[in-house]
Image 1: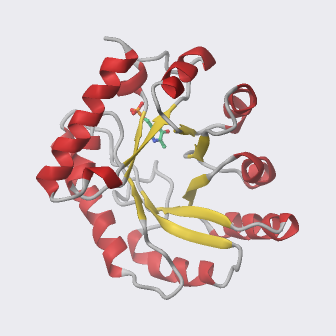
Image 2: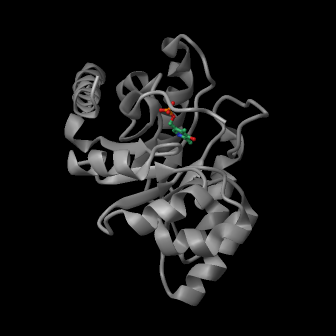
Length: 227
Ligand SMILES: *Cc1c(COP(=O)(O)O)cnc(C)c1O
């Protein structure tokens, strides 16, 4: 299959799943995850109308950002080290992976120096797996309240990663959990707009459960070499 056909398949599936879950398909943003994808292939995706790209490692992202059109919105979706904050703030549109207070403080300090605001999603560890980053669901409220006092950090929603499984249906409880957390916390000044959840294997389930950002790599670009 070609990129164009894969993209059409993904859009069709987003549409179908959104309607199934009672959501408006038009509000759902596809972030194409470009780790291990060549600049040429990314350019092809861009020419097909993809505007939002996700990378989880800064070193890999920087040359691509330099060589691809400036109009692309880059999403930082991986674990963010505090010593990478400066570069990430210069190049990325949205950080999906705010998962700890010291990172929030680093972002705040740097943003003050640059005199900018920083839109972020808070990563939540909905599965409780120790291998996963993210705030525990029961600590989310306190975390959001702490973050609120940082004037430059603008929380825009939540992000999660479901456990890996061959059966996508098993991911449903984790996506549902994130949606319920989003609905539960009505903190003044905290705009819970986005739910970033769902990857190649399970984005249809995530969309049914209310995802409005999905992060898809393999299903779009084909299977790449994994490290
Ligand atoms: C790699 C990655 C994805 C995309 O995974 P695929 O299975 O290729 O769709 C999504 N989110 C994060 C955080 C990732 O690291």
